[in-house]
Image 1 (tube, helix red, strand yellow):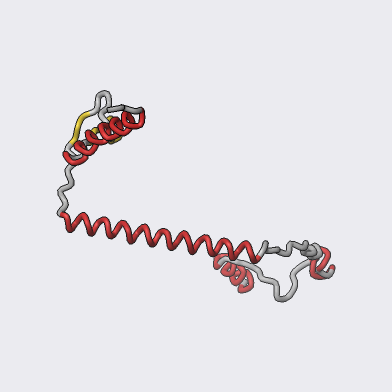
Image 2 (cartoon, one colour):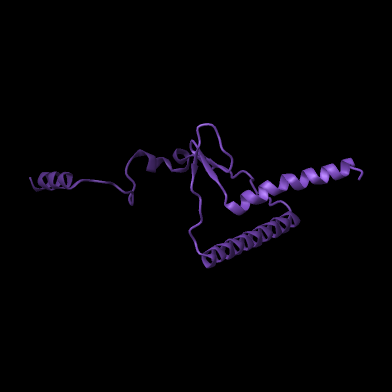
Length: 140
């Protein structure tokens, strides 16, 4: 029998897959390495039990829920891309920013007689104590 490099490669590949398949069937091992978890042992890490305590039905429900969430996320992404494409077709939005003329200064706008003193209709603030003092002065 003639052994070729192709035959050797096939045998090595098959030999490499067998231990991985045996490990998968035995259960996944998990290692805690500081604050991180890994499926590979690490220096100073410790092995932890990572068995799934859920029933087969619970696992199926969880997988179905994950698929629904992924489908919804994909739908949202398609909708967002469609909205972005529609916005690009509309083109940029222009905002008018023409300067607004400034109003005339208040001191120049009022007539001279109004600037000198009180004008009828102007608001004057006073406190109740001030009003009482004025009444007393008028009463004297």
